[in-house]
Image 1 (spheres, rainbow, N blue to C red):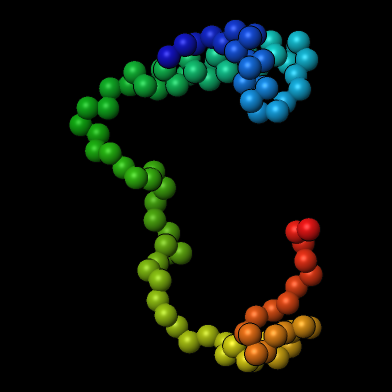
Image 2 (tube, rainbow, N blue to C red; image 1 turned 180 degrees about the vertical axis):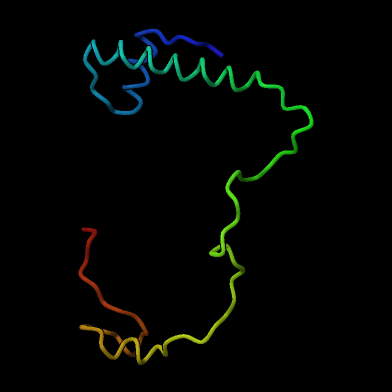
Length: 99
């Protein structure tokens, strides 16, 4: 894994990301990206022998419960107060947001 980025590599990445960078930004990002890769290489070199793989490092929360079907608001009751509810179709009409 390379620990340095050239100015040309950063400029090429900027073009792919549709970013306009000046010379000082290219230099800054080359150094920062190199630092990130150097740190990632340090992490990669850590001996993890005997450490079981995990899917997540976050402890499970009470909100992580199985989905259950529960009684909810009746569809007609939900649509009754809608400003422009289409009762026959069973949905809310909203203003168009995509042209």
